[in-house]
Image 1 (cartoon, rainbow, N blue to C red):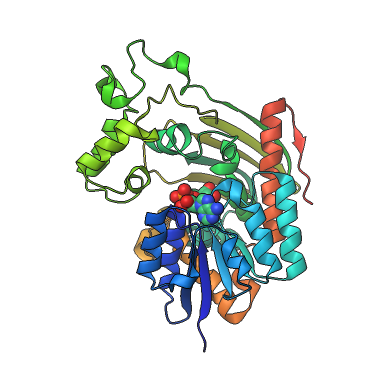
Image 2: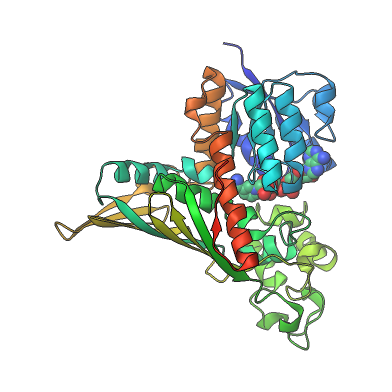
Length: 416
Ligand SMILES: NC(=O)c1ccc[n+]([C@@H]2O[C@H](COP(=O)([O-])OP(=O)(O)OC[C@H]3O[C@@H](n4cnc5c(N)ncnc54)[C@H](O)[C@@H]3O)[C@@H](O)[C@H]2O)c1
């Protein structure tokens, strides 16, 4: 069978991950094009996958001028560059793997869903957690009725203190005007996942949260604008020197170091901290997104969920969820699932790590790409765990929750 051809648009951190995952299917998939404005990232991708020069572009719009020369496109561009590319590629008949969030506004999400439906192309937003092995095990357990009817859920997204500082204070998602609000940027995954696991869509939401810590008034008096020049840097947990040089010393050579510099060595990191955005004091950045937020959800079924996103946690932790059912309780954290049965008062535990290779969003990155490849090769959307309409619906609950936070009210979620 002829290989399916894929173009990577936006060959940054996520584009590279998806190219690697696609390449696991090299017998069925060929990466034939790349569009990326940053020369080093563009050339690296072209070289890695032997992409011919005529298919190497600087901007997402350029491949479209050539007419359709591939089957699918991975859109891994920044948040504010999802809508127009998604619509334009759908209009040319490309199947699409689009990074989350679908788009920064509800209106744009509607426009994308419309273009997808009108063109009848395969479409998945990268809600990788749906595909993670622990989620699939959880769905299987819930469907077996092992906790009776799930009534309520507590779900925690522990962002981690330095991940918050890296991405949402110093980095690309720090400022709503330049990317998206925090709930959309980080937790559209969670609200999508919560709906998927509960098997229902939110009907009403309330929310509270704010930017409480990473503000100029919280800077110590002696704090400099940049960590390398700061007299009190060694007393600050968010010190860029502590975070990045510490990760380097521990052996890290990829994310997040590859975001701050191409020159991953002590000297390269120190130069990036002296000159680039990632060396800035966390109290003196142009950040405005919240560092903690809660969302309360009532589903049409009467079930409820309390969700918390917070910066202030240990790093590199998995999301933690408890589901309370009429006949038992489930606790899970990506690695383990524990099911407590009210009838027997016994707990049964499942170690997901023992069964699957857990890398990249608890194994979700590869599993989602595997599903997309199957959908593409078989021209069968049933391999995808959500399409345009369901993704639109869960995104609408995110916009509703943010409205609830901003206006201090309970918001009815529109599902269409
Ligand atoms: N699914 C997930 O869990 C997950 C995780 C992290 C990020 N994301 C999302 O993935 C997307 C990309 O994030 P990232 O971390 O890879 O960021 P990134 O900045 O590393 O990558 C984005 C790339 O798009 C490129 N780009 C900018 N303008 C372009 C244009 N006109 N044409 C083509 N390419 C262009 C940039 O140069 C950059 O290389 C974002 O929407 C982000 O929110 C998703």
